[in-house]
Length: 416
Image (tube, rainbow, N blue to C red; front, side):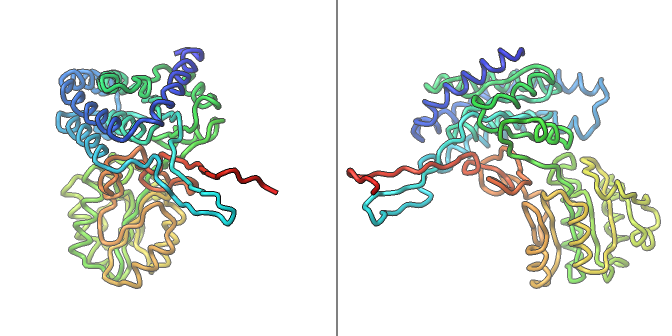
């Protein structure tokens, strides 16, 4: 798309925000249910399009982890549809009163949730994000410009066509959901469309996020990469720890909430490290261990400095033995990305300190890092996981896709 075409799309999206902002919940929910039905009705076409993308990217040498992100199945399409239906059940944040009062001069002041406006979503090869982002934006009254990666072009084109068909059939503007297609220049055009685009949300690898944050003149909600840790404390239930670590690493290793690093307290390292290395090896995981890990489990690969900072997105895991909870927190503060950090412990004090001292969007006690997810948190779906601290942090659902405005009602008051 040329710069003029990108701006024209943004202008149509801006025009669509007016009826969207005023649409009652019943209309938006009907559109979400119609979108879900349309995905299922067009499932065969979507899977055919996705098969083309998967074939093209496999031939081009895309890694297995990235192909897993790209691949759709009938089950994954159904899950996308179910996510839209789940959004329809949730309350509408638009118009919600955040706070309100009657002032001493008789003015009634209310702070209300309102849509952000036009959202540009720039993301890499996960076509399920297309449906999630479209649904969350529509429910929260926002128009969305979807700029997925070229690796998922056929998939995203088919998904967006199905979604737009449903939205238009329910009386809302189809231009509330648009796919922006092109090369690097169209991303730059979106990033510079201040006045037409209200917020940009990047979702993908470090290079994509860095580019958006660095080049955008439009406000950015930054989603971050996930170098997520599991810390096994001296007071951990080791059976529980084994289940959690294996699940956190192997359930969907290509996703940002998969564990990438394991920290084990020295007091339990001799017992726990060999058993967890064996359990992970049975699932195909390669452990990159520090000296403390290699001392009790010599078959692991020596870890480098780069390993401890890596978001592998594969069946690889860095591991280190630490002398204390303080050492674990210090390690996480050095290498973590502010996404999700987990502790396994029976000590309430250790759990309290870990939760208080670790700086992350989500801290999980005695459970897998894989639970940091909008769907798992009951948000219906998520538009991304924010690792920044302003406006939104953690999984972003409907409320995070709103701003606020003040509505002040009087009966003739003037200020003296």
